[in-house]
Amino acid sequence: MLSEWDPQPGWLNTASYGLPPRRAFEALQAMLADWRTGRTSWEGWDTATQRSREAFGRLIKVDHVDVCVGAQVSQVLAPVAAGLAGRRFLVPAEEFTSNLFPWLVAGDVRTAPAAELADHVDSTVDVVAFSVVQSADGAVADYPAIVAAARAHGALVVVDATQACGWLPFDGSLADVVAAGAYKWLMAPRGSAFAYLAPGVRERFVPYAAGWYAGEDVHGSYYGEPMRLADSARRFDISPSWPVYAGTAPALEVIEEIGVAEINAHNVRLANRFRDGLGLPPGDSAITVVDVPGADERLRRAGIRAAVRAGRVRASFHIYTTDADVDAALEALTDG
Image 1 (cartoon, rainbow, N blue to C red):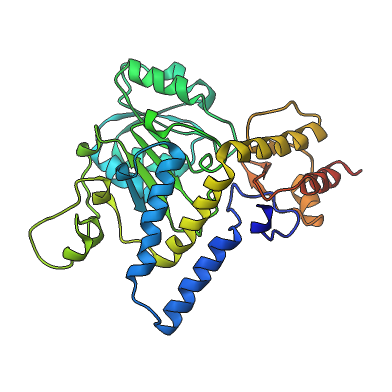
Image 2: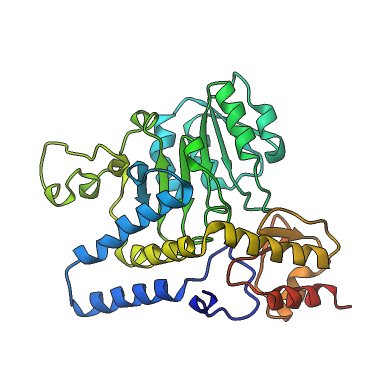
């Protein structure tokens, strides 16, 4: 299956963007070739959107009829924020802002350390919003404990799974809302995103961005009244970018073929190989951060592409990462 990728050695930055499987890249190129020459109508391209929706639903263990498609996390969360305006939100202090700014716009936000989030849920909290995996340092949330604390106090649970979906198995149905951008661990082109909107809560949300693609019959929703939106989560769809979803569907299907559990084992093993080489204890994440003097420059000189987040080098490992990639990064960081 590794023949699906052609990475230049040294890519340790999937937490910024993932590398497409060959079949995803080729599907995108084929769509662009059709567009360039006007070879076909658009309806065939759009089948990839539904394939993507269904694959995402399977990956997080929810029914695809409860999944809407969009472009970015903050965009798919916008109707959620609008529907929960005036509520009281609890969010990790270090949360990525796509899952923070919507709540700051909508209501009263209180923050707590991500590792202590469950302990800060009480009767003053209406909504708990958090990332399953933190972008800054790769910390994996105690998802069941946070959900249990929220349920004990009647709070809703909104999850950003962007840094988790594709390598970390989890049950999306435990939450009320699960949003995810697909261009990182799901290895899709940038510009596709999904949100699971649980049936019991989505009537609180208003599809302000509704257009023809949110119609029950999209082809019968081009013109005029009356309102005829889908009964499912599709009423929150925005019209998809055809090239983006052409590459998204096969990328998600490759993840399904390999299996998230197998990807998890591969990624965490490599992350722990990296940590062990730096004298750090093992962890449970595909993302790790290091404080090594001059680490950013050392890696750059060695041709290792990683990221700097919150002042530390962040390395991230995915299915196309190899032992040789890890060893090259360790050599760069420990030499001299």
